Length: 418
Image 1 (cartoon, rainbow, N blue to C red):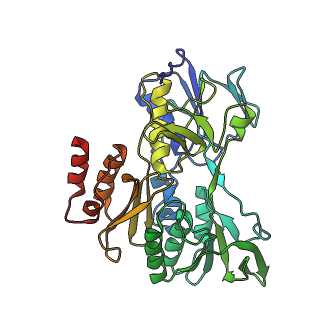
Image 2: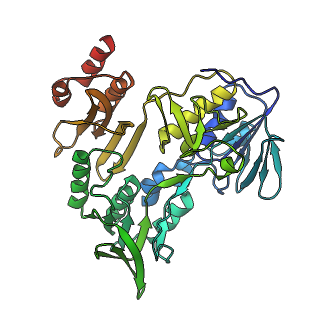
């Protein structure tokens, strides 16, 4: 795989998208010694911030905006990064190697990075645009939702993914009455085995959260200031507030209009290069080739936004390596810290390690004997060694995986020496 050349000196690098990925691209460029013109364009009014707290401690009011920032106040000016907030880019002129902002200002580039992120997937049912129905993606969304949460509020979360369950946990801790409705037979069905999903649901229910599965929302109606979420089979959930969390869509419009190759995101190689060698992409918007997994994948995670951004900055300067990491994700729900490694599409065996009724345990998924993903509840050390085994394509003994008396560290070492 050919390593990309660095942009001509002194050059100009423009990063479109001032989220976590864009901020790490810009900061890493300076850390790696790039001293040319560097512009970071963001359409939100806030400086780059991390999104995971928006459904957890920022939403709960226990964390402020400043603590969510990717970099401290003053960082961008100190590093001579031209940060433009509230700046929406409307076009990429590849022939002129420039991006055009909505107000007409033009930014020339030698290398361009698209870190345009993603937006919530809209629920296509009647009533989804009623007052009291909202989505959570930005800091402004979280702040507005936080103002609504109060003891006794009935909140319905449409979508039993991580975002819906995290909001349900946060709202319940604040005294709200939360109901999660999920169209599939299990919550988190796209991301974890049913054996773990059922444990997660059980712990939510034990805290007072109502969870309805196989609930395919057909409409949302309003009567007398109250909302009702209706399913196709006639079930109804009464609510004062409805939050929709049914996934996100990559913001590929700029890339598509510019003629870049896109398919479930901007298609990039392991160095982050798009079909135009002068244009790179990072973060949620990319469908990137992962040499470790042997396939292309689009990830929506804190880890990918940061680490891919770092890798791409180095690649632009000609001193990078292919971005190849085992995907990692985490979620906090009540007293559960759930960490997941791997990106398995299928598996044929599930191994439970520890007591799922206890405080900590782990779940492993194997495909034809190969460890392809792992999940740990309040067991971060297990994740570390599972990641090592997944990276090596390990085939650990299921009986040893299941036995807490057998140290995962030893299994990982054994696989390394095999």
